[in-house]
Image 1: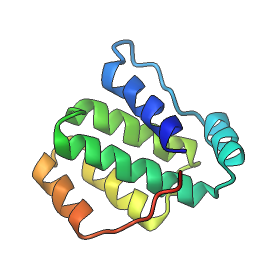
Image 2: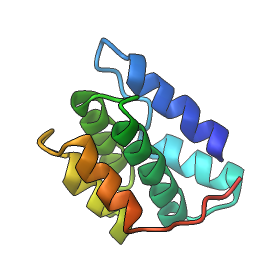
Image 3: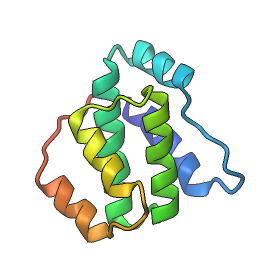
Image 4: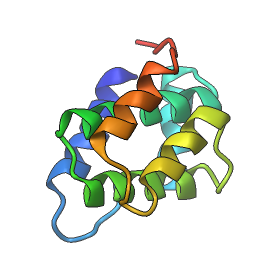
Length: 112
């Protein structure tokens, strides 16, 4: 699953035309392919998204775009951790330090 998430986030790091890489059908297919629940996928995606923002690999605009797509793909129902990441990134006002702080306060096991 980690490779799939990395590919998605690589798209958000380089997209210039505003095209989404994660739609509802994509989320469902990825969950089936990796035999994980939607909440598990969303939390793992959110953790990697926050990590990339915290490290500077994604700027605020691109991180917010990815968070918005995750929110929409999850049919606007995110598990608690993914929701906190979405709320943090939604308005592009949070700093990378705030993302690091959120990550430090949360430990989430990722699936392979």
